[in-house]
Image (cartoon, rainbow, N blue to C red; front, side):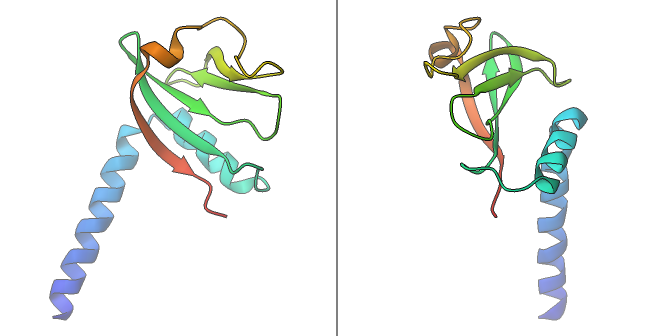
Length: 111
């Protein structure tokens, strides 16, 4: 029984590690930074999407009326599809809501 539990624990650990390998290092570093910072309100969240043929990432802002930026794999800002005073972002990617697919929650602050 103990060996079965150990095997199950090891397989869960391997699955978790393989998930992390698919997340670019710049995004993993940003998540590590968010974990060190005080909890945001609402809690920080990182999502990935497929947008115009590339995998992109959103990282929620830490408060109201701020842009929620869209990043490439190297953490370069592409645009802000939402947030700001109007809630509609910076206007540089107005088709994001319609064109982005494969939304996947990568991390949400559990604190």
